[in-house]
Image (cartoon, rainbow, N blue to C red):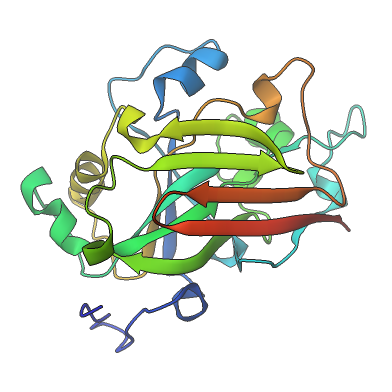
Length: 239
């Protein structure tokens, strides 16, 4: 990989070198089926939120569910998985067009946008950031695959397995807002610095939308597998 983080003087070759990430930007409901399973209609513009960079963790590292993640009314944990394709920015991007956008991408990795739903829906006034920013809630890995090895990032199969059972399975071709559109939109008036990680949205099949609902618990093993990118595995620990 030949793109260098000029501002910081570091070449990113693996997720180990990527951490700590500079910023994490998430995209909500970027797959039609995921919007539908929540009773929502597709959006005209991308839903954008941020995650605390300190929430990033690595392949095979534990995802910790702290007591604060529980619903205070019921005492039950309401923490969910979200398999996603992550885009790593390798060259500063500001006010770029969709045609220019992909020139700023260093590579791709698997991501799991772990989400404490009570905090996402109720505990933070409807804002996503808090419920998605607890420590270890942004697993990334297993490596950053350079753009040269991914001919078409809009033709990748994204799969989430929970304890070996397939929970999510969809192609990135189903995104409402493709990667070039996301980078272009986000860069308008706002610099995407090298080391920015963009989580491009999750397919349908999340735990909160199931009947009965499925919440993460201690001992659960989550695997995000994306064709051509790799497999990201993390075990849940309640602390």
